[in-house]
Image (cartoon, rainbow, N blue to C red; front, side, top):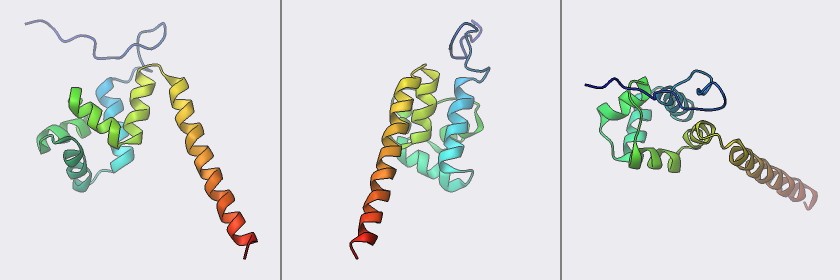
Length: 119
């Protein structure tokens, strides 16, 4: 049997993303987005259609999501999307997402100010 290799994602000259593996980054993102409760596991199960054991493995960072499950997590979780873009070395795409969020927050704040002024 061949040993498992390539567990760390490349980024830069050292070939690692700050020494953090793919499964650890996804686990951290899931915890930040959903929390540590059983409800978090159920939510990820609903998003992906994966089994409870599989999702618990993602949260425990023993295994990571693959293929369709990863796409479903990215579709539903902003934290997983950000982790994925960081691992892919797409910081510019991540910056654009943050700029769009900031712009939306500013537009909302301006609308509230206009609402107060118009009263």
